[in-house]
Length: 105
Image 1 (cartoon, rainbow, N blue to C red):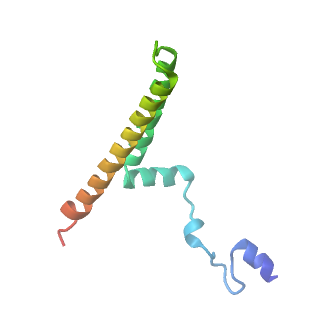
Image 2 (tube, rainbow, N blue to C red; image 1 turned 180 degrees about the vertical axis):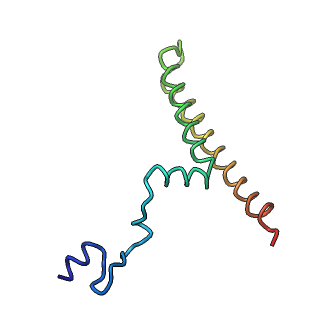
Image 3 (cartoon, rainbow, N blue to C red; image 1 turned 30 degrees about the vertical axis):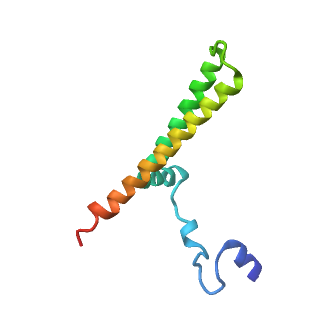
């Protein structure tokens, strides 16, 4: 009997879930949108990384006499630079939000 209560996530005396924060009625999309609103530069970094990778794959066919290894190094540096830049902008934005806008207490 107690095993079935544990598997359902309820206690024997009440019907309270063991982990209520994980059993909310929100969908994955709403969680993702909430995270994007909290940290807006993460999706920007992900999109920039995808754009650089797509551009690199396109240019892979039209690279001319450039060696493959040199082309891949350039694309890796560009993708990492975009992601690091987005993370830096995100940190600066959150610092601005916490220390400039919020301290009106």
